[in-house]
Length: 392
Image (cartoon, rainbow, N blue to C red; front, side, top):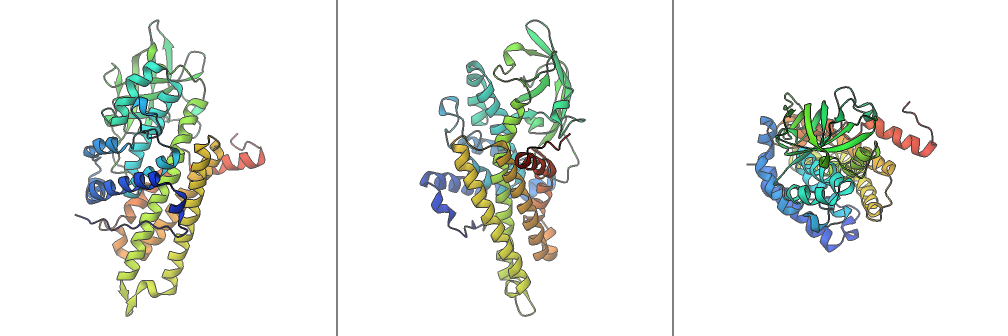
């Protein structure tokens, strides 16, 4: 089994900006990843399987909706704690972080934020513990970056609604007990519905043949005249602001998480550069290798400062969706660039499962697209600074 020798880079002593609780939470998740994830993740990625056995441990650590209040089963933590958790999980594998951030930000968050008390008490404690897993249905076969064009709809049938449509690229779909689904009502308004496994006409076919996020379960959500009780409709939101609010929470987690990939690739390349001998000395002694490593740690440090500041703003409820978009885009770009440079530094060994770099590269090719593509986030920033909408 692979031994996890990871050492966390902290070139600007950013740990000094964290509380003792923050560091304890981060170190607990890091220890879990080193013990339970790193030794098995390459095997699961090669087999394109999700390690279901880790769900219980993630629930016990509070990785599912850690910002949800304790009265509903959450840990009641702040957003820097949430970010640090996602950073450590994605350092292990992007698919693992996807599972946790979907559960917390895309399933628990909307039920807490937009649901009523009965819905919160019914679903949140079981989702927080991992007894139930959830998924989020927004993206459709014909509507990715333009969710307003969604075709999934429901009609009023008295004591229930009849839901029809389909969603795709849904993390956790194959094994989720609960799906928070966004669909249009008869008036054309976007509403959120809680759909449960076992409802007649609801199926979740798994997506096969992925080259990316292979250790994450991905599937479709298909609704064929599904009867959804009216009490399963989220009552406190209407319109696109509902799902977009969830995406802001998820994108925030990705901003921290993708840096975890970058750190893992940097740490791997740094260690390799001290051990690999060519032309009579370690490759780390050559100027071009040092240039690569120096640029890596510089970009990681900039990213660390960006997400830490974003976390303080989110704790104060002042972080804007555009600021979150900037951080998500920057972190993923940083991670991709560092992963590709690190892969080259390791030469042929960089493409093997003996090291995590190629797996990170493949995973990041999904992360750069989901929760808003790289270009969409660029346009969000552009619109924010100019006031002009370039989407239409």
